[in-house]
Image (cartoon, rainbow, N blue to C red; front, side, top):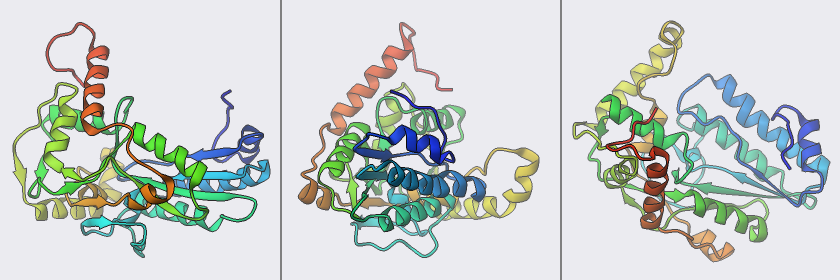
Length: 294
């Protein structure tokens, strides 16, 4: 039964957790740019509240949904596993806040509370109200640019595989440990993104630009936005975090989850794409032509 509350309301969180055997913590400020105070409040302090409430409610297991973004340092992330250290200065407020939250969760592991972290990479699938709509809208508006060689590798994780991995982590995960979750072998960036937006009837533009241009745009935008943002609102056209996580390779290994949790994807990329296309077709109803994404 749903229980009303907020991340800053430990009493409500505690009451909602009473009698539970597992807490799955997936709440965070998910954005590639923003005021650090918002990330610190929602992601860092919010996680501290969840840990405190779980302890107060006597919940034995906490599974925290992390992200590969904690490894973002401005360079590519290639075939990373859980032994790769978190950089001292993660690349942007989202990676930094998620890194701090993950570290708190792992440190909280103990006899009365087993804590486990899962790191799914590039969550996608039916019900997405964030990533796919934004990608499709940018392409429809003509503001999308392919930076770099477009063919770099990326790991992905369908939402059904994320859910499956979270359940296994709750059942079998070792306390204080981290597990990457993926769809399997990495895929080519442009090919995957093209198929992804194609499920809602969108065709990406063809134009591109060198990777150094993305770095320059992101660095310049972040430098001037603290002032310019007050006048224009919104966010910079490109952030360093976005460049790192989209236009450079991000490939990770889920071998640890497979060996320790018995994890294996429950849905393939092919099946996921078909399901996503069906869901968009159903939402569009009898309309013909490409779907418009708000």
